[in-house]
Image 1: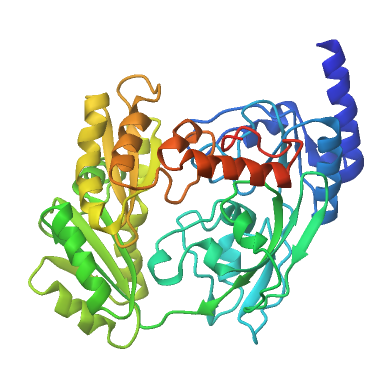
Image 2 (image 1 turned 30 degrees about the vertical axis):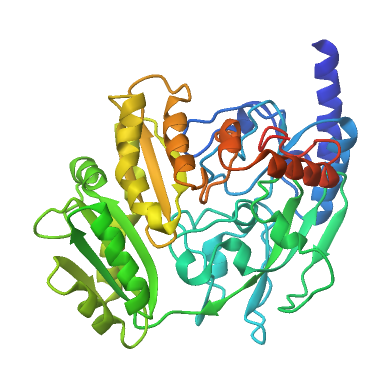
Length: 450
């Protein structure tokens, strides 16, 4: 132990030499970086290192790789599967200081952003342009983390996930090699599309230090509606109709009475409609005909419609606040899954019963993105959190031909169940790709099976 401590002291001194003493944290100063947003994943960092630019990231990785010390990259630490938490005493590499943001390229409608830039800051880069990705944590989630997890959010059905916004990337391999391709060309068939490969790689292949991102015209004439429906199959059918009959559709989201009742009891949230409904569909559309299109779709169904910014914010709060609900009941287990479109209603309707079979007293709150097959399953266990809840949910998802991770990634939470979603041949290919990028196993070694 004495020899190990001396070794780590020498490594820490070398890290200080790269980034400066105020940007190497140990002990209590590092504790806040070693717990995730839910409080479920808690670890310990050998040291927290906060480089200021790509050159310092490269120097840190070259040092740690040469010393055989594992590194966990971390962005805004808004992840929900433990992928950015140093659970085994690794060095924590924080990208929070990489905050450079270029002027908007008006010709291309693109911008280059450092890994530590928040998504909200990118979205605010130009008054008439917007970043397509919109997630609840956008004011603290960062570009690097959003790329590494291939973030989704509420506008995926219109714009796609973070991978679809990438026009280039800068990253550092585990040995300190910098790879950069930030020209932003829409057409560029000159080799492997490694920016796309790094999107969703969860910090296991390289550390993303910057990205070139597309921007889209800011939406106008927005209308938001919340519609009460009798059950989830009916909700899904209404969302399907919206996809074909509302050309300006941007979002199709859902929440249920179970989550709403918790928010009413613990957060004082007033109900969205005069009479309660078992389930609620939120539709957001834009364009001159959006209001009429939504009105035709809604017909005689109970609904609340908002056109003003204030009304729309109020209606959106009913969809954005359900992630808080489970936290009022205990420490939540947040599972994020998807199913083929034709089987979404089956997944959303039966997941609560699947959890109840494994843990009869557990509380389950669901919400999510109807049109892209995604259900967020928040569970507050009654029995031990020993994997039984994941087993029940992921086995159901696998039986429907779905994915055990729609948005959040695999991280530490879902690694034992990856075989349910990916074949042996695919997992072997993943390991070969990972070995090519990171032969020393330096980067996030406990995320995604090697």
